[in-house]
Image 1 (tube, rainbow, N blue to C red):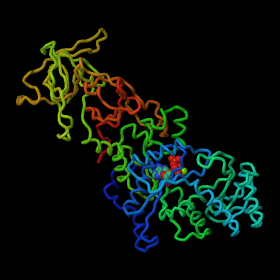
Image 2 (tube, rainbow, N blue to C red; image 1 turned 30 degrees about the vertical axis):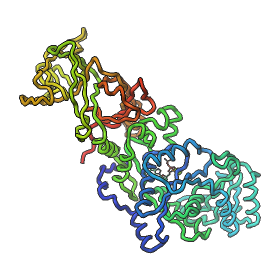
Image 3 (cartoon, rainbow, N blue to C red; image 1 turned 30 degrees about the horizontal axis):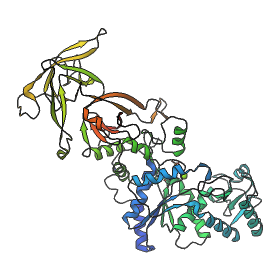
Image 4 (spheres, rainbow, N blue to C red; image 1 turned 90 degrees about the horizontal axis):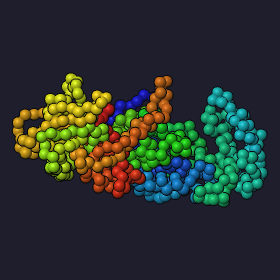
Length: 554
Ligand code: ATP
Ligand code: MG
């Protein structure tokens, strides 16, 4: 495994990155005049993930920074795996992240132009139709240490190639029977330059062009043409395409494009406890291991959104990780840090008891319910206060009681006094147990003089705990999440079999009116959002966004 980067170590100085340095040189040299034009080119074969967010932020904010433009272009040259559902989700995700494209484009709209370009290459003697099978082609390709072998079809005449390519287009051959290859150099040290395939036959329905085409351009051939047609200046992609750059440049040189765009590679985002591959994520969805692409455990933008992440937090994260040429692994704790930072003074706080233990205040009148004032946010006074009912019977967290306290335990135990958040000082006097000896109820007393805000200035207590009033509490559902991926004993990444816990909890009555999509801090627990899909008038289902404590050590 790659070394895990300390979150935030390169976060403070990401205002510039090496790509911006290249662009500034180009502006100085007027390589493209004053133009800076980027694009985000997803293949619509799945939902976007947080890795794509890195590329989106980079492309769109680079264009913004230099008064340039950025296109959203669907790289839809592979008909079999693409779908309009994905097209729509990608558009929604880019917008949600807060970016607006200059143009919305489809690579498939350029199929005619790409075909013309291929014909032009054939006419120049730079491409030929090859009949080798995939297996034979592999044998001819050579290895890193041995040169490849030329195809016997390499010397076909221009005329024959033109006719065969036209017949390929007309549908006269079956899938795999023939391909069009660039004629470059079978002994190139770069295997990508050993007469790569640039067109293949696929009798498949395309989501955009239907059955108009049965030949489709290969990515390495199509991409530079797409960029060039759109007038892209800086074509930013991930590191695995570095070895493909000579082919990118070859295509544009042979097509004699003026001011050709330049490809610049950066390192992909890898996150601990996550997988960043559409193929893997799609398998999770298809196999029913998660509840769809927007399952809150997924690293997809849709999943993060449903989980309660904000666009601000994701953009902040992308800023902090920066852009570099070296592959690395980013600690997911940094992403969690970013959402905590963003929500800290944005959301209101509420009290929720997840694992209830009943408390009876024996000296509190039986038929009285009073309302205590509790501030909505510790961070932001302007958020005001709310009234919360308090009466003789309450719930507290089981964890906030210990019959025999450990050292430094300042919460409830027999004889100890604590503050109930926003209400009174309460002393645990006694416990009630069931037949098995489990504590089922705490018998407590309160001191009426200690009501919060009453100006009481007497003794201090060390613990403040949250509570809900038993009579008026509302039942809510909590979904709490573990990481999608964990390491097994052998250190291998496996799917966490225990990544979702769902249980009921008691909340203060105001939660009954929570609208789907509302975020709260549940006091002493963490940040939560009312699930968009599962929350309605009668059911309140909250996704845990992140807990309060940071495992990120500065
Ligand atoms: P995956 O491997 O997850 O299927 P992909 O690279 O095939 O992703 P594309 O739709 O081709 O997905 O990607 C669109 C853009 O997003 C590309 O420019 C790609 O380089 C970039 N991208 C994809 N994954 C990451 C990542 N983990 N970090 C940064 N950029 C990424
Ligand atoms: Mg791809």
